[in-house]
Image (cartoon, rainbow, N blue to C red):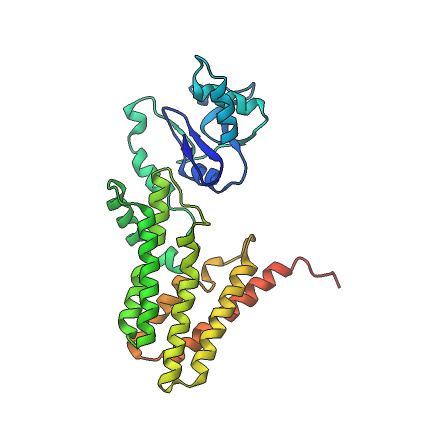
Length: 318
């Protein structure tokens, strides 16, 4: 059993290797649930919990139920008793992930475990929600994840590293150290991706509401404003700061507007990583005014596109 933030626990069965996407689903949920597989020949080795379902080896349980179960346990097995009490309490049953290369694995033999580590690595890739993560960083992300899998390096350290690099870059930009600032920002781009995958592989997924993860976006906005402030004070004029403020405002408005809906071509929208990578050629050319103007336009177009998608289905028919 692993405690989550708050009052819930994740219950893991002995001898079952769960699907990492199922773990992430439970960690991100706000309510107890039990993941199940069908009661058929293919899943005959899994523990039956009712007439039509077997346990997939993974459940999110309220800690209050754990306390009540422990108080009346006696000589019974804690895990089985807790699971059955959760079923009796009508905890929601949800199908586990299924399909080729997905779903839980019953570790009955070494043959079944062969290649499972590679399957975990592939399954942990998750969604790459911007074009930089999808097309430029996969090789770096893959290599770093493989190297760190067998170490005791904590995933949250990578997130803290990305945040520290971004804040150091913001400070550097206020001093006019533009090249080192861009280099630090570029170095920060894969770190949170690797951290998320590493946490999934260790069955302790990072919460999307973790302070360090949520701080990356505002820290990048601070770096953007720092660049605008420095350029405006060194022959860039008021337009540089105006562009930086515009990009930051539209970027935040887009993030708020996008929440909770599917956006077509989502990976091409303005993001922290896309803004950083876009800065590279302009840094070589020293064209900072042009960069700030481009970012303002990029963020504005992204915002209006998201707004169009969000509201197109709510417009009254003419």
